[in-house]
Image (cartoon, rainbow, N blue to C red; front, side):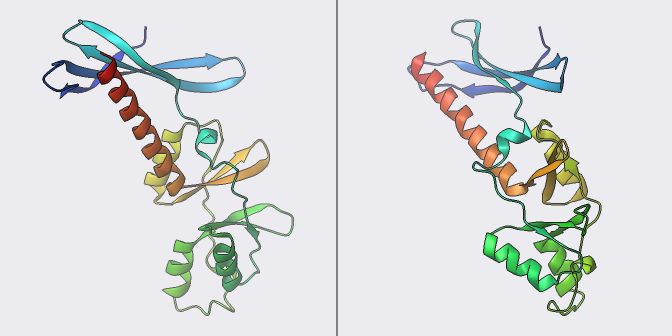
Length: 205
């Protein structure tokens, strides 16, 4: 049995008609398979004083990055180091995106360019955006994750590097750019599902 860590206690599950105290626990269990990385399984329990029992609310495999990526997939836009910064801006506006992947003529990864890079390294430095090159604003120390990595890893990377975009690679192919907006949407959606489960429990018991 996985170890159980209490994350919330003392909240009221219902009004006067059903006075029950809620203890919400989260258990993390590592699961290994022969051909896949270690992933985490999260279990959510509700404990009520009135019944003296744990009620199993949810049993889901920890969210992996491929479950967070937009559906349908958001196309990656590529640009070359010798292209102008102005072309970067045009591509971002035309495709409503915040970052581009920079590759050389052999399609080898050079780095990424984000809106923030253009502001900090282009506008702030007084570069002429029509003549300045992508190579002047490219960020080369790009973090690359797998779609099978857990979401928490992406959050940790963004927090540590202070970058808002992470490149996702499956085998030898770059398949997506994960943005901080994607993560926020996922977190809000997960929170909404948890609230819905708790409300269903309240009205059931």
